Length: 331
Image (cartoon, rainbow, N blue to C red; front, side, top):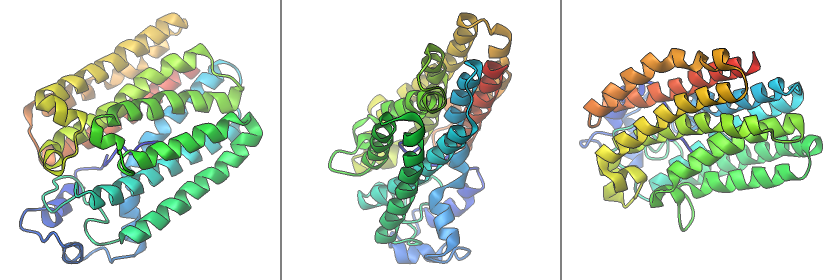
């Protein structure tokens, strides 16, 4: 899976203002001094790098995929839990990769206005971060061995492609996120692959419902990335990171966010109509007031803490929408 950058709460913006302000040193060693509560190399530094507040989003497609399996009468607890564990590990691994590769490519500097990054602050060295990636992806592969025994040889293909995408998002000679393809990658891996894959390991096949149900999840996961890239338009442009938000401009990125969120609600309703679950497919609409409030912030603000809050809010919207969508499908 690719990284959804930093779906964190607004509480991180305080430390960002200290460690990422223009007056802070760009030296990682000196930047670390700005975060006295976290010692370099400590467990707290690793937790920061893993971005725990992003992890519930990785479970959203697993919830929906398992609901699809339930609707088809084939829920299997072991594979479902393994899919959840694999999704969490892939998200953590992609977060570590994003942290270190953005730093090495110069996208994370003292001018960064988003939540703090462990490598940029000097809390973890690039070498340590890459070792951490190997460990996390290794654990994901171990879960993949179990799922291969359960669901067959297609699982290693899905797993290895997902790991490759997580690394290629910001790493390698042609990083996807730097060429405007991050949005597509997030939609595919956090939506289609994750939902369909979760259903597959429990059912042995992918029913049509899984393909349709993956679209709202992928759309909202992509909307999280859009907020992140909208916030970072200026620093990404300076670093040569040509995200879709950089290419479209702020107005285009806002329009993309609106289209993604609106499509999630409309397609969820279409799924309900198509599978005779109209009432329960309407459950995600309970989150619409939150989506409207986020849209107002996104269209009013340019940068800084309000967009950090909108980023966290869009991540919450994705999880809550998916939870209610899954409940409706399961019912």
